[in-house]
Image (cartoon, rainbow, N blue to C red):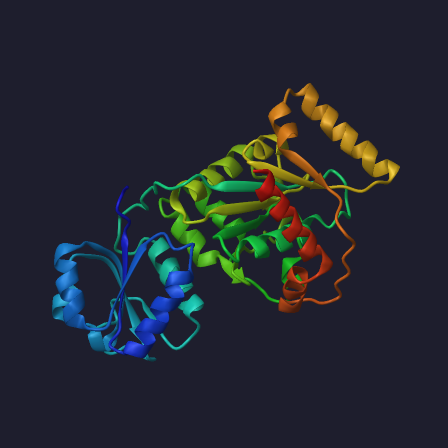
Length: 340
């Protein structure tokens, strides 16, 4: 197995350092091996034998020896205003959420300041790619995908990607996002060597489920080719720590069947009315004409229990897990495990 790039954190405040370490141990989207130090001397000894790619260090721990050590990039973990002598280094305010500290650190690193190292390819077990798609509207497709993601995320590292032209996430979750999947697609087109690191600075989490904020402009989905989606997915498979990726797919995805071919299983929420059934038959017939039997074989049709949720924000997400729909998903997964 290839050794991973080292992300070191050095802070003399023991409580802060260990709280930070506990948080990092739960994060699955950081493309580094993390080491936490509570003394400058301990870190100096470590860096003599181990190349460190990214160092997040408090001002009190910083010294001339560390400044001269072979470190890809140094970021100052600041109490407020950075002291004179350290202005050359990017700084991050330490007394904010650990998630925000990590996002800012990865954003600085992804900008390539002072480093030329590439993210190392990981050797790991096969990642599961779950597609959720239906040619029928109003089937609770996204509701199901978010419920499934949260339940899987209780035990596995799970990433949710919404590939709809108009997801409504900012309104659904009652929050705005500085960067979205659209930005990641932009970095990919630039040929960024630190794409997964940039992804780490964009990823958000809710109830252990990581997600990339969906695009704000429908053109970002419609103009992205199937090969670009496949390339992005392959980088996530090769360079991230995720066990499961959930693709919430829509008809806006170019050459949708090519993306569906990347899925290890596909859930298709359906409805029983004649119009819905006609659309499903046409979709299946099209796949048969295109000789995409492999995609057809991986589709599992599901008829979801009605779920009414008037909440928004985190309350919406919480409600999904403990609803009748959540019970349905847990039973579905249990049955699948028993069936092998």
